[in-house]
Image 1 (cartoon, rainbow, N blue to C red):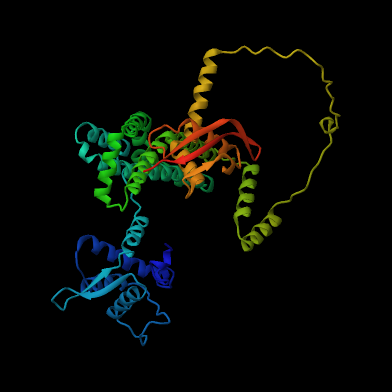
Image 2: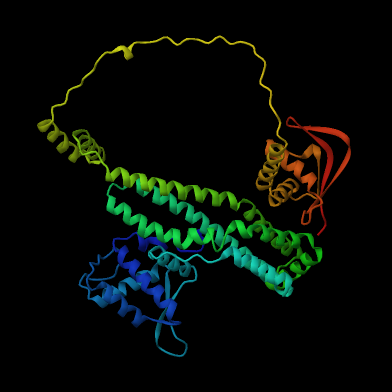
Length: 462
């Protein structure tokens, strides 16, 4: 569904008009009243809006119906009429009365919430999302299996929020790194570090590393979900519960929803370690860069060389008009000449070529422990790159709307497709895999330079 099939085409025009700040304040008033009042009376909304308009300039727009001599009440009504025309609110009456109320459109409510959050500078506290996921699944499995599907839905939602929080934290640190490069005032730099970044670190970064440690809980969460996947009775119970809760038209849709939710959580916790490591690196980089920038600014060169460097920096960031002023001042006060010299180090020395000789290669001593560690590391990388969900999606794409597929019809375009096909053969008997593979003979089939067994991939019956 396209955006402007849901919202009117001029929906966002109030945020780009000449009175955008007034309209934004009006929307914030509307959002506050929506949070505290069930029926938003027109008179109450206009009264709150008039207090905003008292000291603000309001420019009439082309389609505003007015003679130009407006009172504060008239301006407030123009703002309300504009919100109605652009599809933010509707005006109606309370049942069995003549009291006018305004009702936000259903699509406008989440936009109001988004605008309110963007204008709110307070940092949201981090919730224990990983522990909540683990405890919910564990309690449902051990004590209240009747609500296991609800626990799975909650775990899926917590995982989505955790993924969002981690990515927002990562890009938030990148923003502070950009500020370090652009900031040349020691006091402002220290203020950003101890006021803004410390809040981000104390409320988000440290909880993820300590009380809600991802590394501590991610393996137990994966083990619980793998136990669910390996228990056919539990899966069937989840399918039936999903049919009851979400009212799917077909059982196959409920099965896909349950498997997709489980795969999403498992895939996330298999790769979340890399994301946390990247955040750790960015955190260390920020701390180091902040200290170095403060040290640099505190010990800035005050000699003629340092002052000349400051002038050149000011020239580089100045406008054309200010550059002319800087150049004229430099010409009046500084006599600059180009100086060159010639010494022994300036002579050219021809590079001596080394003659290659054939020698015995150095012996390599194989370390058994190192080899085992390398194999485990390689397997861990493969598992994180080619998850069960990717294998399942790859086979579903191959089959498309067909029930079976032979080797001669399998498209292989790159090494990744070849590896996924190998893993599909290996993991065909895993729980939740919606296909089976039958090998006909020892013959090989060549597909785009890759040799694969002569086999048939069939879709399992639901």
